[in-house]
Figure 1 (spheres, rainbow, N blue to C red):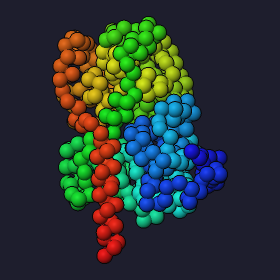
Figure 2 (tube, rainbow, N blue to C red):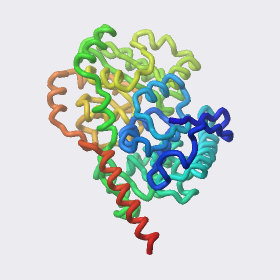
Figure 3 (cartoon, rainbow, N blue to C red):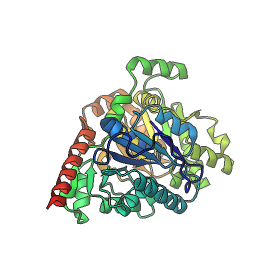
Figure 4 (cartoon, one colour):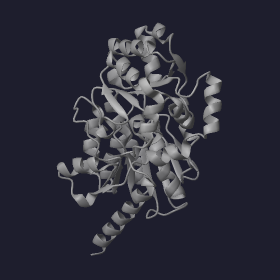
Length: 394
């Protein structure tokens, strides 16, 4: 494996093995562009599937070293790994720097396709760079819609879907969203969500889960896990304080893996005292975090990925957000609430019969599929390449 490190986004330093003639040729290589922890997690099954034929471009959108290294240690080694440093600036600057850096990589390392996942700034950068280089674009997790134009990710995901040559929709609802926007049916495939594979390969054994809970002084079904990090919740001091107070008055211990962004805002706003009644822990490696969720009575979160994960782990989630692009779990695994007293009331509702809710949720299939979504995505990608080859030959 070779690594490209960028001290400044416009300067790229190539390792000795970064030779396009060394290893698989262009027709075999695929390039996966990402820049955040959730993207790496969800692309991991595809990285594993393509192996040495995969080149990963990590933009550094999430530039916290601890969070990034926790995920890197758990994914398969690709054929090449280009590590950029485009984070830590405004969203517009980050997008511009990332497009330019990915464009440079695609120009120097020809590829058969670019894969992007989800709706981040990095995903949009990868999509724009692929389009500029006339490289086929595959959008993993296509068709999600919140219809909330205050959410930056909504603009990203719409733009990526309309640029993509292949939209891999996790659910039938996502496919219907794409068709309603005029995207041709031949560019859309329902594949399920790769989080299903990523989770099942990472979740700890029951014995490991018990040992981890014992080390934390927790009992199965005897605590709540909370994660809060979205700008709408942590960038406004009153809203963040409200959420922390609601968590603190829950009747069970609350374990809070503290996202770096949230921690910085708590310090800036002088809210550290509101953490006193919470069990604050460092961001967890993906397997360790899944183990915490498996044993929790309830999860409270503003994360999109956790809304998917609980449907596989069969745990309830109270989603603290203005809107959601994952309505498939509403009324089964999840409840959407605004910051305020409903956080407490909805958690307490789930606590009225923890064992009964666990048993009921165990019988509900995840809306995000089963089996191997990555294999279905790879199959549709091969068909896309074959179709383009036929067109080029005529």
